[in-house]
Image: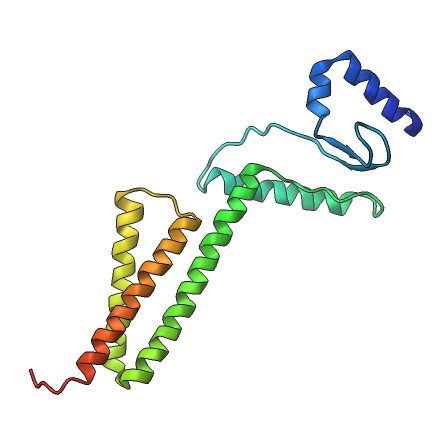
Length: 187
C-alpha cells in the first residue's frame, strides 16, 4: 500500500465497518482530529493467552513482554520507532514490585536508623538489640495477621499502614527502654 493512500484506505475501512472503526479508534494518533495531520503514534492491541506457572501471572506476562519488546527494538532499523509494551497487567506488576521494593528498602533503612538512635540515647547494646527484636517481632505479628489470617494483598495502603504501625511501635519501645535505662530502681 503506497504511503500517500494509507490514510484514505483507513477512512474507507472505518466507514465500511463500524467494528473496525471502533477497534482502531484509540490505536492511531494524529495531530489533527480523526486521521488528519501527521501521525504521532500507532499501537496494536493484542489479546494474550497466558498460562500461570509458578510466579504471579502479571509478573510473568510483564517479564515476557519486556523481553519481547527488547528483542524487537534490537532487531528493528535504527530510524524505526521503539516498541513499547503497555498494559494494565504489566503496569500493575511493575507497581507491585516497586511498592514492595521501596517498602522493604525503607524498612531496613529506618530500622538501621532506629538502632543508631537507640544506641545514642541508651548507650547500651543489649537494650538496643532488645528493642530491635521487639520491633521485628511486632512486624512478624502484623504481617501474619494481615497476610496469613486476613489474606490482604500488599498494596500502597497496606505499605503506608505497616510503616506507620511499625514507626509507632518503635517510638513506644524506644521510650520504654529509655525510661528503664534511666530508672533508679534496683528491681
